[in-house]
Image 1 (cartoon, helix red, strand yellow):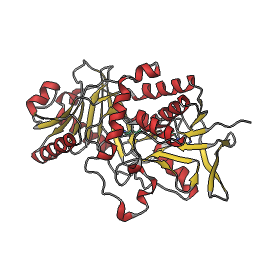
Image 2 (cartoon, helix red, strand yellow):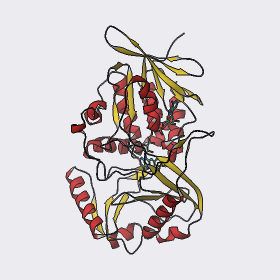
Image 3 (cartoon, helix red, strand yellow):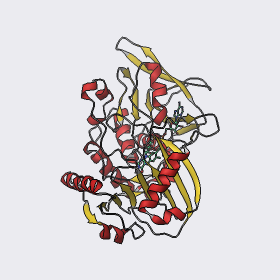
Length: 392
Ligand SMILES: Cc1cc2nc3c(=O)[nH]c(=O)nc-3n(C[C@H](O)[C@H](O)[C@H](O)COP(=O)(O)OP(=O)(O)OC[C@H]3O[C@@H](n4cnc5c(N)ncnc54)[C@H](O)[C@@H]3O)c2cc1C
Protein backbone atom coordinates (compact mmCIF):
# COMPACT_ATOMS: atom_id res chain seq x y z
CA UNK A 1 0.00 0.00 0.00
CA UNK A 2 1.36 3.43 -0.88
CA UNK A 3 1.47 6.15 1.73
CA UNK A 4 1.18 9.87 1.11
CA UNK A 5 4.33 11.96 1.36
CA UNK A 6 2.65 14.12 3.98
CA UNK A 7 -0.36 13.80 6.26
CA UNK A 8 -1.85 16.95 7.77
CA UNK A 9 -4.02 16.96 10.90
CA UNK A 10 -6.62 19.76 10.72
CA UNK A 11 -8.59 21.31 7.87
CA UNK A 12 -8.61 24.89 9.09
CA UNK A 13 -7.02 27.61 6.99
CA UNK A 14 -3.54 26.46 8.05
CA UNK A 15 -3.99 22.82 7.07
CA UNK A 16 -5.89 23.57 3.85
CA UNK A 17 -3.52 26.31 2.63
CA UNK A 18 -0.50 24.13 3.37
CA UNK A 19 -2.06 21.14 1.63
CA UNK A 20 -2.62 23.14 -1.57
CA UNK A 21 0.91 24.56 -1.54
CA UNK A 22 2.38 21.10 -1.01
CA UNK A 23 0.31 19.52 -3.76
CA UNK A 24 1.31 22.31 -6.14
CA UNK A 25 4.94 21.51 -5.24
CA UNK A 26 4.35 17.90 -6.34
CA UNK A 27 3.82 16.14 -2.99
CA UNK A 28 1.07 13.60 -2.31
CA UNK A 29 -0.96 14.81 0.68
CA UNK A 30 -3.79 13.60 2.92
CA UNK A 31 -5.66 15.88 5.32
CA UNK A 32 -7.39 14.32 8.33
CA UNK A 33 -10.14 16.42 9.90
CA UNK A 34 -12.17 15.41 12.94
CA UNK A 35 -15.26 17.36 11.87
CA UNK A 36 -15.42 19.42 8.67
CA UNK A 37 -13.26 22.17 7.16
CA UNK A 38 -13.30 25.37 9.28
CA UNK A 39 -15.01 23.57 12.18
CA UNK A 40 -13.02 25.46 14.82
CA UNK A 41 -11.05 28.75 14.83
CA UNK A 42 -11.24 29.18 11.06
CA UNK A 43 -15.02 29.24 11.37
CA UNK A 44 -15.29 31.06 14.72
CA UNK A 45 -13.06 33.92 13.50
CA UNK A 46 -13.78 37.58 12.78
CA UNK A 47 -11.60 37.01 9.67
CA UNK A 48 -9.74 40.30 9.53
CA UNK A 49 -6.78 40.28 7.14
CA UNK A 50 -4.49 42.64 8.92
CA UNK A 51 -0.87 43.76 8.88
CA UNK A 52 -1.32 46.70 11.26
CA UNK A 53 -0.87 45.96 14.94
CA UNK A 54 1.26 42.89 14.21
CA UNK A 55 4.36 42.00 16.17
CA UNK A 56 7.36 42.99 13.98
CA UNK A 57 8.27 39.29 13.81
CA UNK A 58 4.98 38.56 12.02
CA UNK A 59 4.95 41.54 9.69
CA UNK A 60 6.78 39.86 6.79
CA UNK A 61 4.27 36.97 6.83
CA UNK A 62 1.35 39.41 7.04
CA UNK A 63 2.62 41.45 4.09
CA UNK A 64 3.30 38.34 2.02
CA UNK A 65 -0.20 37.14 2.84
CA UNK A 66 -1.78 40.39 1.64
CA UNK A 67 0.07 39.93 -1.66
CA UNK A 68 -1.42 36.44 -1.96
CA UNK A 69 -4.93 37.59 -0.95
CA UNK A 70 -5.01 40.05 -3.89
CA UNK A 71 -5.15 37.20 -6.42
CA UNK A 72 -6.44 34.37 -4.23
CA UNK A 73 -9.91 34.18 -5.83
CA UNK A 74 -8.30 33.52 -9.21
CA UNK A 75 -5.83 31.01 -7.77
CA UNK A 76 -8.55 29.07 -5.93
CA UNK A 77 -11.14 29.47 -8.67
CA UNK A 78 -13.60 30.50 -5.95
CA UNK A 79 -14.69 33.69 -4.20
CA UNK A 80 -13.07 34.26 -0.80
CA UNK A 81 -15.06 37.43 -0.12
CA UNK A 82 -11.75 39.27 0.31
CA UNK A 83 -12.09 43.06 0.40
CA UNK A 84 -9.18 45.41 0.99
CA UNK A 85 -11.30 47.88 2.94
CA UNK A 86 -8.61 48.96 5.40
CA UNK A 87 -8.38 48.82 9.18
CA UNK A 88 -9.22 51.60 11.62
CA UNK A 89 -7.94 51.10 15.17
CA UNK A 90 -9.72 53.50 17.48
CA UNK A 91 -8.80 55.46 20.57
CA UNK A 92 -11.78 55.97 22.90
CA UNK A 93 -9.79 57.64 25.70
CA UNK A 94 -6.67 59.78 26.09
CA UNK A 95 -4.77 56.72 27.36
CA UNK A 96 -5.75 54.80 24.22
CA UNK A 97 -4.77 57.79 22.07
CA UNK A 98 -1.20 57.35 23.36
CA UNK A 99 -1.24 53.68 22.36
CA UNK A 100 -2.50 54.50 18.86
CA UNK A 101 0.07 57.25 18.32
CA UNK A 102 2.88 54.88 19.38
CA UNK A 103 1.47 52.16 17.10
CA UNK A 104 1.46 54.43 14.05
CA UNK A 105 5.01 55.62 14.78
CA UNK A 106 6.46 52.14 15.29
CA UNK A 107 4.66 50.52 12.37
CA UNK A 108 5.47 53.35 9.98
CA UNK A 109 9.14 52.88 10.96
CA UNK A 110 8.76 49.20 10.14
CA UNK A 111 7.72 50.25 6.62
CA UNK A 112 3.94 49.77 6.81
CA UNK A 113 1.90 52.55 5.20
CA UNK A 114 -0.22 53.79 8.09
CA UNK A 115 -1.71 57.14 9.06
CA UNK A 116 -2.86 58.80 12.24
CA UNK A 117 -6.37 60.26 11.82
CA UNK A 118 -8.33 62.54 14.13
CA UNK A 119 -11.89 61.48 15.01
CA UNK A 120 -13.45 63.51 12.23
CA UNK A 121 -11.19 61.99 9.56
CA UNK A 122 -11.94 58.50 10.91
CA UNK A 123 -15.67 59.24 10.65
CA UNK A 124 -15.22 60.26 7.01
CA UNK A 125 -14.01 56.71 6.34
CA UNK A 126 -16.62 55.11 8.62
CA UNK A 127 -19.54 57.55 9.10
CA UNK A 128 -21.33 55.19 11.51
CA UNK A 129 -18.59 55.68 14.15
CA UNK A 130 -19.47 57.36 17.43
CA UNK A 131 -18.72 61.08 17.91
CA UNK A 132 -16.75 60.00 20.97
CA UNK A 133 -13.85 58.49 19.00
CA UNK A 134 -10.77 60.64 19.61
CA UNK A 135 -8.43 59.37 16.92
CA UNK A 136 -7.54 56.25 14.96
CA UNK A 137 -4.76 54.51 13.10
CA UNK A 138 -5.59 53.85 9.45
CA UNK A 139 -4.04 51.08 7.41
CA UNK A 140 -5.73 51.13 3.96
CA UNK A 141 -4.09 47.90 2.76
CA UNK A 142 -5.70 45.76 5.49
CA UNK A 143 -9.01 44.03 4.87
CA UNK A 144 -11.22 41.03 5.60
CA UNK A 145 -12.61 37.90 3.95
CA UNK A 146 -15.26 35.20 4.32
CA UNK A 147 -13.52 32.54 6.41
CA UNK A 148 -15.63 29.50 5.57
CA UNK A 149 -15.68 30.31 1.84
CA UNK A 150 -11.89 30.80 1.94
CA UNK A 151 -11.20 27.49 3.65
CA UNK A 152 -13.62 25.71 1.30
CA UNK A 153 -11.89 27.40 -1.64
CA UNK A 154 -8.50 26.10 -0.46
CA UNK A 155 -9.94 22.65 0.16
CA UNK A 156 -11.52 22.34 -3.30
CA UNK A 157 -8.42 23.67 -5.05
CA UNK A 158 -6.28 21.23 -3.04
CA UNK A 159 -8.59 18.36 -4.01
CA UNK A 160 -8.27 19.34 -7.67
CA UNK A 161 -4.50 19.21 -7.18
CA UNK A 162 -4.79 15.65 -5.84
CA UNK A 163 -5.05 16.13 -2.05
CA UNK A 164 -7.25 13.56 -0.28
CA UNK A 165 -9.43 14.92 2.55
CA UNK A 166 -10.78 12.54 5.18
CA UNK A 167 -13.33 14.45 7.26
CA UNK A 168 -15.21 13.26 10.34
CA UNK A 169 -12.15 11.26 11.36
CA UNK A 170 -10.34 12.11 14.59
CA UNK A 171 -6.65 11.47 15.10
CA UNK A 172 -6.23 9.97 18.56
CA UNK A 173 -2.43 9.71 18.74
CA UNK A 174 0.79 10.30 16.84
CA UNK A 175 2.93 7.19 16.57
CA UNK A 176 6.72 7.37 16.43
CA UNK A 177 9.54 4.84 16.42
CA UNK A 178 13.03 4.98 17.90
CA UNK A 179 15.76 4.76 15.28
CA UNK A 180 19.53 4.83 15.57
CA UNK A 181 19.39 8.50 14.60
CA UNK A 182 16.68 9.42 17.13
CA UNK A 183 12.89 9.36 16.97
CA UNK A 184 10.94 9.20 13.71
CA UNK A 185 7.29 9.95 12.87
CA UNK A 186 5.49 6.82 11.63
CA UNK A 187 1.72 7.20 11.54
CA UNK A 188 -1.47 8.65 13.01
CA UNK A 189 -3.84 6.51 15.06
CA UNK A 190 -7.53 6.80 14.06
CA UNK A 191 -10.72 4.77 14.45
CA UNK A 192 -10.21 3.64 10.83
CA UNK A 193 -6.73 2.31 11.60
CA UNK A 194 -3.28 3.87 11.38
CA UNK A 195 -2.49 6.40 8.66
CA UNK A 196 1.18 6.18 7.73
CA UNK A 197 3.03 8.90 5.84
CA UNK A 198 6.57 10.12 5.28
CA UNK A 199 5.91 13.29 7.23
CA UNK A 200 3.19 14.87 9.31
CA UNK A 201 2.07 18.43 9.98
CA UNK A 202 -0.02 19.11 13.08
CA UNK A 203 -2.32 22.05 12.26
CA UNK A 204 -4.91 21.15 14.86
CA UNK A 205 -5.43 24.61 16.39
CA UNK A 206 -6.49 24.61 20.04
CA UNK A 207 -6.23 20.81 20.07
CA UNK A 208 -2.63 20.57 18.96
CA UNK A 209 -1.35 19.95 22.50
CA UNK A 210 -3.71 16.99 22.87
CA UNK A 211 -1.63 15.31 20.14
CA UNK A 212 1.76 16.58 21.34
CA UNK A 213 1.11 15.45 24.94
CA UNK A 214 1.57 11.78 24.07
CA UNK A 215 5.03 12.61 22.70
CA UNK A 216 6.13 14.48 25.82
CA UNK A 217 5.91 17.82 23.97
CA UNK A 218 3.77 20.88 24.70
CA UNK A 219 3.33 24.42 23.44
CA UNK A 220 2.60 26.63 26.46
CA UNK A 221 -0.73 27.94 25.27
CA UNK A 222 -3.69 29.25 27.23
CA UNK A 223 -7.18 29.17 25.69
CA UNK A 224 -9.04 32.43 26.37
CA UNK A 225 -12.59 32.72 25.08
CA UNK A 226 -13.97 35.35 22.72
CA UNK A 227 -17.68 36.11 22.19
CA UNK A 228 -18.83 36.55 18.60
CA UNK A 229 -22.07 38.07 17.28
CA UNK A 230 -23.47 38.14 13.77
CA UNK A 231 -26.39 40.39 12.77
CA UNK A 232 -28.93 39.91 10.02
CA UNK A 233 -27.98 41.60 6.70
CA UNK A 234 -28.07 45.39 7.08
CA UNK A 235 -27.58 48.17 4.51
CA UNK A 236 -23.88 48.46 3.60
CA UNK A 237 -22.24 51.24 5.62
CA UNK A 238 -18.86 49.98 6.91
CA UNK A 239 -15.88 49.25 4.64
CA UNK A 240 -12.95 48.82 7.03
CA UNK A 241 -12.44 46.44 9.93
CA UNK A 242 -12.72 48.35 13.20
CA UNK A 243 -10.47 47.51 16.15
CA UNK A 244 -9.69 49.36 19.36
CA UNK A 245 -6.45 50.22 21.11
CA UNK A 246 -6.77 47.69 23.93
CA UNK A 247 -8.10 44.94 21.64
CA UNK A 248 -11.32 44.31 23.58
CA UNK A 249 -13.50 44.76 20.47
CA UNK A 250 -13.38 44.16 16.71
CA UNK A 251 -16.16 44.63 14.18
CA UNK A 252 -16.60 44.42 10.43
CA UNK A 253 -19.45 44.30 7.92
CA UNK A 254 -19.41 41.19 5.75
CA UNK A 255 -20.03 41.52 2.03
CA UNK A 256 -23.54 40.09 2.56
CA UNK A 257 -24.34 43.04 4.86
CA UNK A 258 -24.15 41.12 8.14
CA UNK A 259 -22.05 42.70 10.88
CA UNK A 260 -19.73 40.36 12.75
CA UNK A 261 -18.30 41.58 16.03
CA UNK A 262 -16.17 40.11 18.78
CA UNK A 263 -15.31 41.02 22.36
CA UNK A 264 -11.90 40.74 23.98
CA UNK A 265 -10.01 37.59 24.91
CA UNK A 266 -11.33 36.57 28.32
CA UNK A 267 -9.98 33.93 30.69
CA UNK A 268 -13.43 32.79 31.80
CA UNK A 269 -12.68 29.07 31.97
CA UNK A 270 -14.93 28.38 28.96
CA UNK A 271 -14.17 24.93 27.55
CA UNK A 272 -14.36 23.31 24.16
CA UNK A 273 -17.60 21.28 24.13
CA UNK A 274 -17.05 18.19 21.96
CA UNK A 275 -20.24 16.40 23.03
CA UNK A 276 -22.29 17.41 19.96
CA UNK A 277 -21.96 17.00 16.21
CA UNK A 278 -20.00 20.24 16.00
CA UNK A 279 -17.32 21.55 18.36
CA UNK A 280 -18.75 24.45 20.35
CA UNK A 281 -17.72 27.08 22.89
CA UNK A 282 -20.50 28.59 25.00
CA UNK A 283 -19.91 32.25 25.92
CA UNK A 284 -21.11 33.43 29.33
CA UNK A 285 -23.98 35.92 29.49
CA UNK A 286 -21.77 38.55 31.18
CA UNK A 287 -19.26 38.36 28.33
CA UNK A 288 -22.05 38.82 25.79
CA UNK A 289 -23.40 41.84 27.66
CA UNK A 290 -19.91 43.39 27.81
CA UNK A 291 -19.40 42.90 24.08
CA UNK A 292 -22.76 44.51 23.18
CA UNK A 293 -21.95 47.48 25.40
CA UNK A 294 -18.48 47.88 23.85
CA UNK A 295 -19.67 47.66 20.24
CA UNK A 296 -22.51 50.10 20.88
CA UNK A 297 -19.95 52.52 22.31
CA UNK A 298 -18.07 52.75 19.00
CA UNK A 299 -20.92 52.00 16.55
CA UNK A 300 -24.13 53.28 18.23
CA UNK A 301 -26.34 51.68 15.52
CA UNK A 302 -25.28 48.24 16.78
CA UNK A 303 -27.38 48.60 19.94
CA UNK A 304 -30.51 48.20 17.77
CA UNK A 305 -29.12 45.62 15.33
CA UNK A 306 -31.09 42.35 15.07
CA UNK A 307 -28.74 39.52 16.05
CA UNK A 308 -28.93 36.35 13.97
CA UNK A 309 -26.23 34.21 15.61
CA UNK A 310 -24.03 34.17 18.70
CA UNK A 311 -21.12 31.83 19.32
CA UNK A 312 -17.89 31.56 21.25
CA UNK A 313 -14.36 30.84 20.08
CA UNK A 314 -11.13 29.88 21.80
CA UNK A 315 -7.75 31.42 20.98
CA UNK A 316 -4.53 29.37 21.11
CA UNK A 317 -2.54 32.06 22.91
CA UNK A 318 1.22 31.59 23.36
CA UNK A 319 3.29 33.58 25.89
CA UNK A 320 4.58 35.95 23.18
CA UNK A 321 1.39 35.85 21.07
CA UNK A 322 3.33 34.39 18.12
CA UNK A 323 2.73 30.97 16.56
CA UNK A 324 4.97 27.91 16.46
CA UNK A 325 5.92 27.18 12.84
CA UNK A 326 8.62 24.57 13.15
CA UNK A 327 9.77 20.98 13.31
CA UNK A 328 8.65 19.16 16.46
CA UNK A 329 11.81 19.00 18.58
CA UNK A 330 13.49 15.59 18.58
CA UNK A 331 10.99 13.93 16.21
CA UNK A 332 12.10 13.53 12.65
CA UNK A 333 9.31 14.02 10.13
CA UNK A 334 6.90 15.79 12.50
CA UNK A 335 6.06 19.50 12.09
CA UNK A 336 3.79 21.93 13.94
CA UNK A 337 1.87 25.04 12.87
CA UNK A 338 -0.21 26.22 15.83
CA UNK A 339 -0.47 28.82 18.58
CA UNK A 340 -1.69 31.60 16.27
CA UNK A 341 -2.88 33.58 19.29
CA UNK A 342 -6.00 34.97 17.63
CA UNK A 343 -4.49 36.25 14.39
CA UNK A 344 -3.76 33.24 12.19
CA UNK A 345 -6.51 33.72 9.62
CA UNK A 346 -5.10 36.69 7.72
CA UNK A 347 -1.61 35.19 7.48
CA UNK A 348 -2.96 31.71 6.64
CA UNK A 349 -2.14 31.79 2.91
CA UNK A 350 1.47 32.83 3.58
CA UNK A 351 1.83 30.35 6.44
CA UNK A 352 0.65 27.61 4.08
CA UNK A 353 3.33 28.52 1.58
CA UNK A 354 6.06 28.69 4.24
CA UNK A 355 5.07 25.43 5.98
CA UNK A 356 4.83 23.56 2.68
CA UNK A 357 8.38 24.64 1.87
CA UNK A 358 9.68 23.74 5.34
CA UNK A 359 8.03 20.31 5.45
CA UNK A 360 9.24 19.50 1.93
CA UNK A 361 12.84 20.25 2.92
CA UNK A 362 13.09 23.68 1.37
CA UNK A 363 14.09 27.00 2.88
CA UNK A 364 11.03 29.27 3.28
CA UNK A 365 11.36 32.70 1.64
CA UNK A 366 10.35 34.24 4.95
CA UNK A 367 12.59 33.23 7.87
CA UNK A 368 10.67 31.35 10.54
CA UNK A 369 13.27 31.72 13.35
CA UNK A 370 10.94 33.83 15.51
CA UNK A 371 8.44 30.96 15.48
CA UNK A 372 10.75 28.23 16.81
CA UNK A 373 9.13 25.58 19.01
CA UNK A 374 11.97 25.63 21.50
CA UNK A 375 11.87 29.36 22.22
CA UNK A 376 9.65 28.50 25.17
CA UNK A 377 12.08 25.94 26.59
CA UNK A 378 13.96 28.68 28.48
CA UNK A 379 11.43 30.53 30.66
CA UNK A 380 13.92 33.42 30.99
CA UNK A 381 13.89 33.78 27.21
CA UNK A 382 10.11 33.95 26.85
CA UNK A 383 8.83 37.38 25.93
CA UNK A 384 6.07 39.05 27.92
CA UNK A 385 2.73 38.83 26.03
CA UNK A 386 2.55 41.49 23.35
CA UNK A 387 0.61 44.56 24.48
CA UNK A 388 -1.59 44.31 21.38
CA UNK A 389 -2.76 40.70 21.43
CA UNK A 390 -5.36 41.24 18.76
CA UNK A 391 -7.84 38.95 17.13
CA UNK A 392 -9.16 41.47 14.65
C1 LIG B 1 -13.23 34.77 17.82
C2 LIG B 1 -11.99 34.76 17.00
C3 LIG B 1 -11.69 35.86 16.19
C4 LIG B 1 -10.55 35.83 15.40
N1 LIG B 1 -10.30 36.89 14.57
C5 LIG B 1 -9.24 36.85 13.72
C6 LIG B 1 -9.03 37.87 12.79
O1 LIG B 1 -9.80 38.83 12.71
N2 LIG B 1 -7.95 37.79 11.97
C7 LIG B 1 -7.08 36.75 12.04
O2 LIG B 1 -6.10 36.74 11.29
N3 LIG B 1 -7.28 35.73 12.91
C8 LIG B 1 -8.33 35.76 13.73
N4 LIG B 1 -8.56 34.74 14.62
C9 LIG B 1 -7.62 33.64 14.66
C10 LIG B 1 -7.78 32.72 13.48
O3 LIG B 1 -9.15 32.47 13.25
C11 LIG B 1 -7.03 31.41 13.77
O4 LIG B 1 -5.70 31.72 14.17
C12 LIG B 1 -6.97 30.52 12.54
O5 LIG B 1 -8.26 30.31 12.01
C13 LIG B 1 -6.33 29.20 12.93
O6 LIG B 1 -6.47 28.31 11.85
P1 LIG B 1 -5.91 26.84 12.00
O7 LIG B 1 -6.15 26.17 10.71
O8 LIG B 1 -4.50 26.89 12.50
O9 LIG B 1 -6.75 26.19 13.18
P2 LIG B 1 -8.32 25.73 13.15
O10 LIG B 1 -9.11 26.54 12.21
O11 LIG B 1 -8.77 25.66 14.57
O12 LIG B 1 -8.22 24.28 12.55
C14 LIG B 1 -7.81 23.17 13.27
C15 LIG B 1 -8.61 21.98 12.77
O13 LIG B 1 -8.04 20.81 13.32
C16 LIG B 1 -9.09 19.90 13.59
N5 LIG B 1 -8.59 18.96 14.59
C17 LIG B 1 -8.16 19.25 15.83
N6 LIG B 1 -7.75 18.13 16.47
C18 LIG B 1 -7.93 17.13 15.59
C19 LIG B 1 -7.70 15.73 15.67
N7 LIG B 1 -7.20 15.15 16.77
N8 LIG B 1 -8.02 14.96 14.59
C20 LIG B 1 -8.53 15.52 13.45
N9 LIG B 1 -8.76 16.84 13.34
C21 LIG B 1 -8.46 17.64 14.40
C22 LIG B 1 -10.22 20.79 14.10
O14 LIG B 1 -11.48 20.16 13.98
C23 LIG B 1 -10.07 22.02 13.23
O15 LIG B 1 -10.92 21.99 12.10
C24 LIG B 1 -9.68 34.72 15.43
C25 LIG B 1 -9.99 33.62 16.22
C26 LIG B 1 -11.14 33.62 17.00
C27 LIG B 1 -11.47 32.41 17.82
